Length: 415
Image 1 (cartoon, one colour):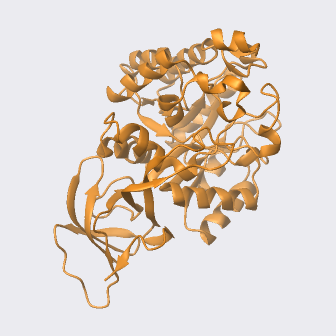
Image 2 (image 1 turned 90 degrees about the vertical axis):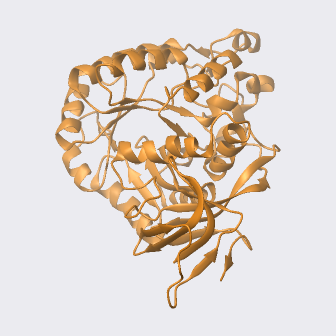
Image 3 (image 1 turned 120 degrees about the horizontal axis):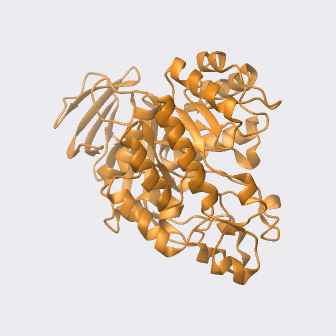
């Protein structure tokens, strides 16, 4: 298949050219490739061709692992420009057995997607999972909660070192968070809501950073929301450069003000913070102190969201609009270039998972998207905090392993 006259853009490139793919990989890149006999040719004039996005922090609807939710996730990923997903294991059933992994793999075989299950360090019974077996079955990382028992944490670190895979860590102290529903601030006091202090995250980041330094693990922090957490990581990276931070697009765009009027669409975890923190996170992103971005896709159904704020579930449905959110709020206002977005959302996640994706290079996997920078869209539904807003940049087509998984009607011409 030959892609003609596209703007080719990845972390290092932004130029006009052609790309040829065959057998699931990129085979040629040049300013003007000559079509081969019988070859399918796509006219990509006016479109940008990028490596597919890779999201390392994705959960299923209502944390429920079933066929329906997997299908919905895959469809949203294709439309949002995401070709690879790291699926967090804190669902029901938990990703701690061969059976759950086989279900996930069966869906990948039927519907073209790179769905990487992340192994839960502990089983439902509180004991350590069979991590070597889970790794052989395709788990490329081990997930730990920062408040995990110290001895189990040490053993999980040792397994990760032995298997040469990263640890994914969510930092949260449940005893500090309690039944908190939003960020601890003047606003939460005015609204009379129980709050979650930033210390719940920060002190756990400090602990886990020291664990990573002592043990020598590759450690990726999931969805951080405090600039202080980044400062701690900066210091520890001087001794272990394989410690990585992540931030969601929402914490760079939205603030806790959206929680006013008890708007449960804005109830996400970690909670949205004030504008001062948001600005600091944006500055940190521009300085390279944040290493990966995420959609933080963790949808909850209307029955769990349309409740009193305290009782409503945490979560956000964002994968479907992920590229548009990145383009609208980071590229259009010139906070990042499109190449920098590709660095944080494709290259770095691929490097952490050790997969040959996230770049436009001969021999790389042909996971690519075509995007129309001028197209507009608008998220629909009361469950999106962006509902009714105009978003710019839309995925015109998505290819995984060289196979078209999604194409917007009349967006691409065949020659």
